[in-house]
Image (cartoon, rainbow, N blue to C red):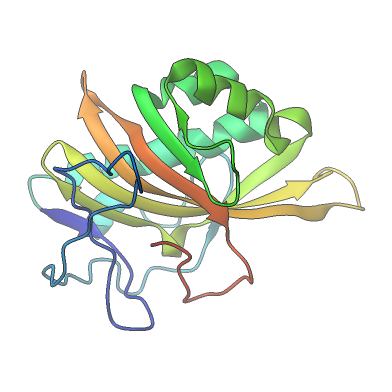
Length: 208
């Protein structure tokens, strides 16, 4: 198992129970406790990453072991997600999701969004695809936990509206977290939860 996962204030880290899906009733993530702790991102600078996902040091340089390449691929998955939002590229966005993918949006009574058509409809009507926004992510808060063909991923999105104007503003602060699946040679979003990432904090994680 290869892990990229900053420590939370309570000393615990989120763990992906990647072999099991959420039940259709509660759709809550089934987590295991007492995962082996590995601090593999010690000393990573708090760089804010733009739509290209560029950081001062690469993921491959931060981790080692047979699954380090998988961690790098997952890192590129989140970078592509932010690029798709920023460039309003719906085809790119949909290529990042499993065909049976699930998105649960906290506070949205019409979620979960299940399957290609509903996911596409959700993204096309979302703020980033209806308004011009620049999607940023604090790289030092990204969490990746690989377990075979599935993995846990957590990241935040801080979207800047009117980003090329002096009047630019923070339009949205959100997180996306959950289970990924490795299929056909690439990682895709499988069972994810999104919600607000407020108030902004260096060491607080908004899910689970």
